Image (cartoon, rainbow over all chains, first blue to last red; front, top):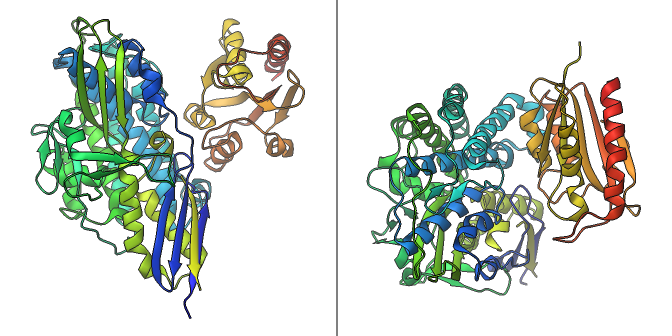
Length: 432
Length: 148
């Protein structure tokens, strides 16, 4: 007699946005795994068409309250490519500083408030705070530093408003940045302590033959620029993205999923991919820490994303401190440009992974087409693939235990569902 | 000696849900050196601002059939759990305050002020009922701050 079993997680918790997971098992065989993203489509690309190109960074920032800088960075780089503008020197450095702020606030929030409870057996950050108040306080303080950078450089902590095509609307005064240095010196050491803490957790034994994909740069840990590289050796420029990666619609999700066109296979974005592909470009303290923590090279265990994410917090502090110490405002806040007809694409590294934008603009400076491919939608089919491979070892567990284990795997991706719809219920069907 | 006081208006740009921001604006125009006034999109933001704060006042919109109705609770208050604060964000105001309390960050006095609103639609303007309630609410807050 066969046994059919359904596990349902009606609303995934400790993820950004709303989604569900449905798993159907028939006689011990995984028949179906669906990551249901049911937030309504937000139609940002359609909203952008016909708007002045200068409006784009402010509108795309509204896609996400956690990673607005990523949307601003990918949009301005793509528009600058369309206009033939290249932002270099101090303005380029300040953009990296702004991105450091976002990585710090987003990663610190995910590590301490959303993900650590999984490893220590707590239902929530609130429950974690009862037994580990110092660590939770540390996480909140790190997050605050990231937000402070966004406030000073971006004009406000959520949905910053100071990023412009060609640079910034306004440059901060030197003292506005230098007064952050003591906090960031504390933060660098605190981030190292946090990474050592999470590296000591017990990790499920689960390894996958991932195709890692990330932006890479020969001279720096890539954030804003560089070719898109894969672990099988492909290297393409951002404007080739759509020739190699395809978005596809699935009935159970309002977010598009993505696969590589040449292999038809899923791929992995995010901190684990970045560290695996770009470890040599980490700054000295972050690289030493990755070695000290014995993070495998490459690491193929998605649960260890929390270590990669924590090392990236150290990387962001290290780079931010260097920029804060050297900052001397000079010159114009942005490069002048002329409107012209053109098309441009860019990929930058959002906290959750590669974020691709492409825009067409006309000679009057209006957007004629827009395409935005967020990291969570690209990771969505990889998450489903992981769950299919992870579930067989869990089938003797109760439905509640299976649901919790699957949610934990999903959280390793730090999915941002609001961005992707642009998550989580778990349903497990066991057929008998 | 009076401690440092913080007012946080929580809101969004949508219709009456912006009432917390409007009240923050009115309070900041009174230029009290004793009061720090901030606006927030999400309750979690106030966790960043509590260091050195002795008295915390928070104002948010409250779902109600009586737009413009005014409320005030001292935290912790059983009513707050029942009051449906219309935050769409991950961490509710209640959760943010509970976390602050657990971490020893909560000021000795925390009050929550509510203005009743009907669910707004994106792009709505402030309704006449809620707009009319703002001066009364600001006066009540100033009175409470004066006596704190």
